[in-house]
Length: 353
Image 1 (cartoon, rainbow, N blue to C red):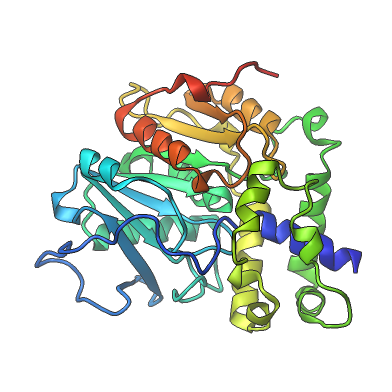
Image 2 (cartoon, rainbow, N blue to C red):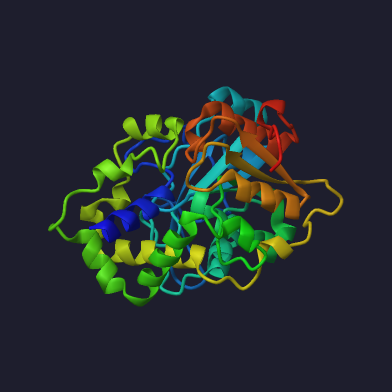
């Protein structure tokens, strides 16, 4: 019972959106050109390996936009995730936003060979097939950030700018100092869930779908794992559909979630903390956005990353938790910093630990 609660809780922590909410931005219209892929319902592209990715476009029409931004959703989420910004800002910036169901999520085909490298390839392919140009902006949310780290490693020449929003930390990164993570209980939770996901998936599947033990709904909103702002969001949220017991019984859903978790928390083929500045002339920037009250990813680790990589602009929301994308002011600040180079004083860390 304890194992199931911990596993479900840890997995839910990295889901960023609730499956039944409506998009916070208007869907764009008239965004096709004569060279675009044939329309489909829902719109989708076919990748070079034969898989299909389903996507959604928001904001102004693509060919009329000033900025093209790809948002990469987190664990247990989808292209329907919320990213709260006003129509006024969309019109002011001439903003086009592309969201897509990552492999195995929503209506996109699963990828049995998923890796951090394949996630990068998916992003680059959908950008090319939708004619987003030689460079585009990317925003990675929570566990979706591992794909963005891979983009920084593999396709920095395609990036106009990058924002990592409450990015998860992989405790297997070699450069993380032991004295910073040795007492972090999240490390052991991640290790435990990773081991079970990789070596005993049948046991994990049974624990997550069995009916012999009580529900974990009480634990889901435990203040030990969520700050006050996060709890307010969860109180009004209908729940993470992909992580419901009914959906987890679907073998395809379970396998995709398991592979995503393994890719994000398993051993990578590079250490992000060894990356060089992809924009050496500082004409573009990389940003990390972190909530000071985040109990899923501690701010101390994000501050260490930003010190290790001084070319990253670090922003800290004083009363923010892990669900920053539910805050309109924060979402708009993320876009203004990414696209216009603004550095709002409100989100500068007050002290450095």
